[in-house]
Length: 387
Image (tube, one colour):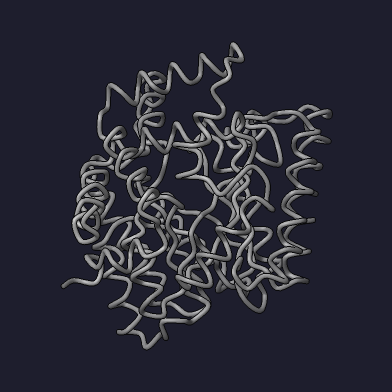
């Protein structure tokens, strides 16, 4: 049996009823028109304040999220760590806020999580999105090389200060920080800021991690250029490597605005690009890799690269990461072999986390084979348990 086919290990932490719920959810997600209609209806119902939060909470929310608050998430975090040797990354998944008060609120959340990480071995990383700390339009304006107004310049300095507050504390507490990537038309400004932070806080080891979305065909080149800067300025590179989450949006915008799409031409090109990035990182020292992937082939490749470069399964410079509620067959079987594995555990008020959940559902319908693979494994485990 291949490693990722062991459903007994994969679903050991799921009760029979949780297994049934997962099977039902992925059955629904497999139906593209249903996801589209469901998303629209849910958005409408929340907008007009229909009382559907309880229904969302007991189905899709509880499957893909840890809870409404950090405290809510603790039973799941403890269970995964104690019984499955799988770590958690607490991800405050509230999106689309653009008020200073929201950014300050997100900052205090991350500070609390970093302090939390220091005491809990089960939470090895903190994480935030650049737009959690500043307005999207501000990043976009800087990415386009436009000059900020004096008021915007002050606003940007507050964004920079939030990043520094988090990274300085992370360095003091020895808690690495993953900074998510977002849409390509705002990413240039985020990259430039994160490079400055790496130069400052990654002198001895990788504390600050940027994210490479490998469905973008320019990211391997970006990594190589960054590597040269790291050699010149003597700092470590921390990188979360993912395939990416905004493909449809990226292609639509490129077409609408008439510029070449930044996205690889097809799935195969993305896979090649992803594997090339992890290959490059494993070949060079002073790099720490968080491989965010639900792809079995890339996971097998990374295991063989670790072996080739004599990197121990539990070396802290190498992590595998999956989203909570997905790809348990990868997470738990890797952890069972002693690899460092972390589940991204989203949390936040049900209403505020909906954009994240809808994106998850849409992503599952658009990734060919992802949902059928989940369903097939759940079927095998149901049969094994004779449900």
